[in-house]
Structure formats: structure tokens, C-alpha cells
Length: 240
Ligand SMILES: *Cc1c(COP(=O)(O)O)cnc(C)c1O
Image (cartoon, rainbow, N blue to C red; front, side, top):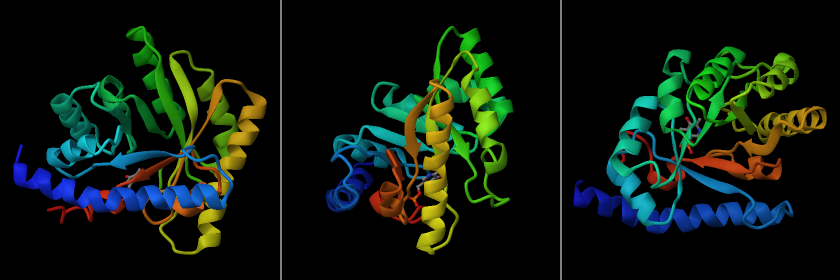
């Protein structure tokens, strides 16, 4: 690995990581959330191995990738035990076995079809896969996820699949600045979680929501995991 590049990321994280942690702590405090109740997932997607190396050295232990190929390369390089590895991007059914092999938690299970495929893989391999159900809370056609109209029914069915452990829900907010719109998307996911968990004990309490631009609103609305890339590692494509 390139030492210069690793140093660049290390120097950057020395500034950005305390700043992100402070944003999270302030947001927890502002909404009377328990300090430390929001987990920081560092999104290293499209950043090189050196970013991962610097992140691990800085004590970041939850790392997220949005493409299976890149996740495989990074897990292959650093090892499955180096971090808790999160798959956060859209996953094609045919890549389910590969994602299952390298992910500790798959956030992006966005259809019953994909859930069933992952469940089959888990059963064949005699294991249990931890997953989240991704919900398209904004209803935007461009976003993947269970549609709000079908989410109650379909996610309840997903939770019955043997081989899967549904730890909770995930969403991506629409790309807008309007706080009310963002709050409605995140609040909608929280309300869905409350409804589902009243109906079944097979769905856990995790709410994966909040990115660089909206983490405060997400935490206010009950996020338990924020997925942060840009605020930690800089703009993608101009990393170093
Ligand atoms: C890229 C990505 C993130 C991180 O976004 P930033 O705005 O860079 O913090 C979070 N979640 C998903 C699903 C992503 O693809």
C-alpha cells in the first residue's frame, strides 16, 4: 500500500473523525438520545485500500461498501475480522451468495425476491444472515426499496424466512435540502418499525438512516446507525 496515500487519509481523519463524532454526539444530546446509541458506519466506497487502512488505524470498526466487488477486494485484503463489514448498496439477486460470503450485515435487502435468495443461501450454508430491509420511504422511482404501500406486509413475510435475522430497517432520504421532507422520510421509517415490531418479534430495532448531509435529522428521528462517507474521507473521485 502507498504510504503517502495512507498518511493523507490519516491526516484527514485526524480532523474529520472528531468533527463527525461531535456532530453525532450533539444530535444525540439535542434529541435526548443515549450518548453512544448511534453507531458510525464509515463508508469507504470508491476510496482505495489506504482509506481503509487509515480508518482501521483511527479506530473505526464498522465499514460500509456499496458494491459487492469492492467489498470482496477490501475484505480479502484486510480480512473478515478486521472490521464489521456492511453491504449498503443495491444488490442483484445473482450476487447474493457473494454478498453473503463477505458481509456481516446487509442493509440493502430491497425486495422479497432478494430476501428469499439470501435465505436460500443461508440455509444451504447452514448459517444465519443478518440483514436490514431497505424501504423506499420517499416513494421516488429512482430509489430501491420496499414501497411504503407494501412494506408492512412484505417485510413481515421477509421476517418469517428461515436463515435470515432481520435486525431492522434502512432507508435513503431523497436528495433534497428540505428538512421537513427528510424528517418525514426518516420518521416514516421509524413509524414502520414500530408497527412491524408490534406485529412480530422477528424484527430487530435497528434503523440505518442518515448520511453526510442529513445525519442530524436522522438521529432526531431515531437512527441507530449513520452511514458516513464524504464527511470522513472527502469527495469521492477526488480523494487524494
Ligand atoms: C455512499 C453512500 C452513503 C454515504 O454517503 P455520504 O453522503 O458520502 O456520507 C451512505 N449510504 C449509502 C447507501 C451510500 O451508497
